[in-house]
Structure formats: C-alpha cells, structure tokens
Image 1: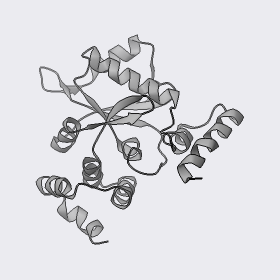
Image 2 (image 1 turned 180 degrees about the vertical axis):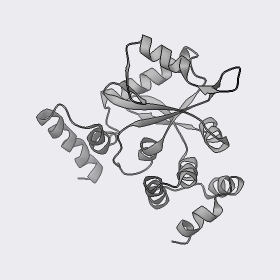
Image 3 (image 1 turned 90 degrees about the vertical axis):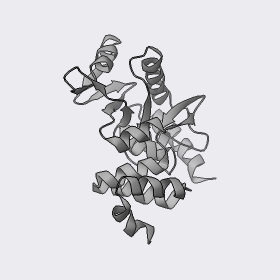
Image 4 (image 1 turned 135 degrees about the vertical axis):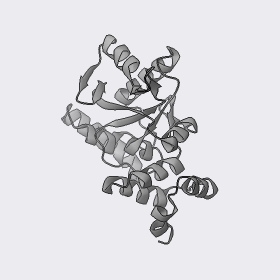
Amino acid sequence: MSKRGFVGITLQKISKASPEFSVSDIFRYSLFSSDKLKYPNMEKVIQVLKELVSKKIIESYAIGGAVGVIFYTEPINTKDVDIFVAPQMTKSGIVHLGSIYEYLKNAGFVMEGQYFIIGGIPVDFIAAYNELTLEALYNSIEKPYGKTKVKVLRPEYLLAIALQTGRPQDLKKVDLLKGEVDLDKTLLKDILKRYDLQKNWGKYAKE
C-alpha cells in the first residue's frame, strides 16, 4: 500500500476515535490522500471562496502558503489556509478587506484573531501585498479537490514568494518544492530574475 493510501486509512481511524483533532492534524493526515480525500470542511472553504467571486465580493483568489504547497508535495503541518486576493483600495489609497469581512460576518462566520473560521478551519485572507504576489495571484491555476476545483498559486510562484519572505518555515517550503516538484525552470528563472531573487536561490540550485 502506498504512503498516501495509508494516510487516508489513518484519517478514518483518527476521526472515529477522536472527532475533535487539531487543524494541523486535519491537513497533515487528510488534506491529500491517494484519492485526494474529499474532506468536507475544506470543501466548505472552497464553496465560500466561489461564493465570494460569484457575488463579486472579490475579483479572484488563490490558495498559497503551506496549503498551496501541499497541492504539489507530500503533506506538511500547517494551522491555517492562506487565501491571496486582489487588494481593495479606499479613495485615500489604503488597502482594506472590508467587503470580505462584512460578507462573511453577515453569513454567520466568526473571527478568531486574524482568521475567519470556516468549517472549523482558520482561513487567512491576504491582500496581494507586492508585485510578486499580485502576479502570482493572476497566474494561478485550477487544481482538483474532491469533486470540485480550486485556484492555487503555481509552484514556481510559491517558491519565489517563500524565498522572498525568507523565514525558516518558508525555506522549508523551498526545500519541498525543489525536491518533489517538476518545476518549470524557464518560468522560475524568469520570476527569480525579475524580482531579484537569484542570489537567494543560488544555494538551493547548487544542491
């Protein structure tokens, strides 16, 4: 039996024995198994994202961060889902996400700190905060999840964003993407050159 197939069986045992387990466990054990496990809470998040687009609350979205990486690699621990959206600007030029917050609160979702809790999963809405993240958002691709599809940042952009951010947890994503994903080297080279990330990438490219 493959490792991913075993993951799905492990989840069934965990969920029966412990109905309440951490979000990290949800993502580590259930977000992706051999059949792209149809975890209902994650599908609820996807449903809400599509509602936000259809009601023109947001123009577009894409999953990034650790969960974005999981679409391309083995499961890793994470506590939330990062959702990149196009920034909304006030007349004074201040970025805000007020329309998203208003819609979700009216729909009955509550906030805990910076997160909206959707189906028990903390969801962090992040306005694309620089040219790289905005370009990544507009070049996102659809990936299958259960019976639906969801927009995810391309792995080349996930890697570049992780390099640019540079925290230890981000550099772990770089290691995963480099080691497990068949990256588009031409696209990656172009992104790294345009955003002055070639030196950051240098030590990884030599390994």
